[in-house]
Every structure is written in C-alpha cells, then in structure tokens.
Image (cartoon, rainbow, N blue to C red; front, side, top):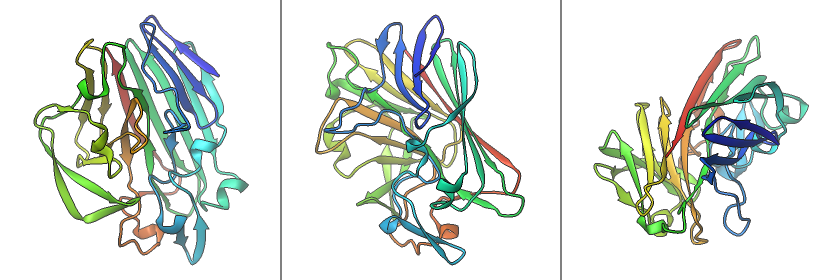
Length: 290
C-alpha cells in the first residue's frame, strides 16, 4: 500500500486499480471503507468505459469485444512511476490482456497529490498508436462516508452544487442512459440526502463541461467535503439501493453508459472521447476536506 502524507492529510493508495483506500483529514476517516453487502469498492478509476455496454459487448472495425461495467482498469495492477511524500504517479499500459477486450494502444496515468487539505487527482490518457484514433471514456468513482461522525445521520447530510442552478439530468433505465428524455435536477438550494433518491441508480448531472463544485455537509458536526470538477461533462451522485449503507459517491465522468438506442458500434457510443495518434488528454478533479 502506498502512503502519502502532509500536515493535514494521510492517504493510502493500492496499486491494484490505482484505487484510494483511505483518506484521513486531521485524523478522521472520510473515505468509505467498503462492504460487500452493499458496495465492496471504495474509489475505483473507470477506464476505458463508464457504465455498462449493452450486453457487455461493442463492435469496432467489424470485430466484437466484451467489456464489463466500468472497464478493466479498476481490476489491473498499476506500476508506480514516481513517488514523493505527497505525490505518486501510477501507470497502466496496453498489453496482450487489454487488447483482447480493447484494441487500442494506450498509456493511462493517475497522479495523486496532496496540497494542504486537498487531494488532487490528475489523469493523463495517451494514444500510443501511430495510426488509429483512440476511443475511450473515463470516470472517477470515490465513495465518502455519510455520516462522518456519530453525531450525524444520512438524512441530515446535505448536498449542494455550485453554481446553484437547475441542471439537466440523464436518467438511467436499468443500466443504460436515456438520452431521449432528459429531465431537470434542481440544485438552486441544498438537498437533504435520502436513500430513496437512488432508487433508480445514480443521479447524473449534465454540466455541459462547466466547472462545478459538489459539497457534502454533515449538518450536526459541520464536517464535509467538496469535489471540485474542472471540465467533466457529467457528475453523478450514487449510493446503494435497496441495500442502504452509509456512503455517497460523487463521481466525475467523461463518458456515459450506453444509450437505450445504442447500435453497439464504439464509434457511435454516447459521449465517447476521441484522441488522435500520439496525443495525450488530461483530466482532473480535486477533493477538499473540512
């Protein structure tokens, strides 16, 4: 296990999936610690897809490939490229195993850095091919403890979004995106959490790529956190239902699950990103704890 530490934060990261396993701010654990009865993961990195494909398959250049929900990066061991007391860079490269499920040459890096009370997360996705345009999606899926203290409750924790406005909402029908019937999600004021908010899976905000900050605040103690997004076109809020438990995920997404009308062709996939040969895309978000 990799450990990063400064005067305010102590963070543990597992090379398996480059997944954060613990975030302690001033000695208090903020990250969900996992429970197989509801959700056994903690903060997986979603690559090269977000969500689920229809029947877990897609087609690319007349070949059919199988790829399960959220892709394979979360279940693969990353290599540590560099590490200091407050920063680590981990790498996953395409290989014979990944090519069986995803035919692109890539270099995927995740960098974690501590800055005062912030955990900064930076992604670099490089198309290592000299010829083919790379098609991919990317997502972050950190789960946070709610409530954070014994004084708090799930239902007395509030979520707010800045800018405070009405956002477009992408509904999930089963595991798939209903892009033909966008709804409206009112975040002009803070919303009290309830488990039944997640009866139809995640609440997906369409941000149009504008910078957004999602804040979770435990009313009783005043403790909480902010997830700061720079350009993620979608931000999802999720908790397990009906298996209710004490966590909420705040997820930055550069991609979506297959739409209800998906034809299975990767080039037509909803919200797919395109990366020219030899180029690198950068994505990032931060979490500030209080």
